[in-house]
Length: 233
Image (cartoon, rainbow, N blue to C red; front, side, top):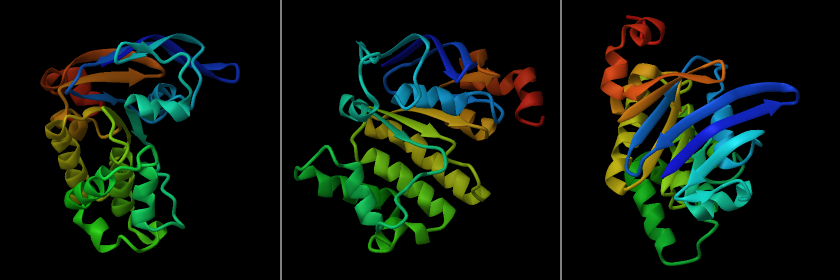
């Protein structure tokens, strides 16, 4: 579904991605793990079109994304739940969700919202409240639900567990895992390597703008290098 080949990207004159190769197959959960500052968020920004690439190719569903602007990538089936949630704090929970469905004006929008509320019941309870009044975990739920309102084929998730208590982290990861049953392919970027690899099919380890290790998730969990560097074992 998604192929990244030789992607490089810069901030000013400083190159931060140094030739990234990566693929996500239909129906998979693929995770990119690594320390803070490794370039993981920059990679997702390149995929969603908010950060330009200086070299390489991004292909989604057989189509080159080189000429597809960021605001049109959702209509091609690619959505992102960004780092830091970036919800509209002054709008209600329901208004945030409706903005996620801005491409659509059909009868399915209400059905999609019902699905979001079934996935995150607390959002239904607070549907008329300002999103800025939600807890951090609830805001993360809203960010994911808002992205899903765009009916993506592939969802880019950037650090969904950041700053959350362990019980909420487990809940968020359970939801991500459940997306496979909804035919949503997922590319998950995470510092929480163990949690991400437990629910992923395959994984990539990124260090200072390069992919250094890749493989099936169970193999990566068992890899002594990853256990020592990222799992604290």
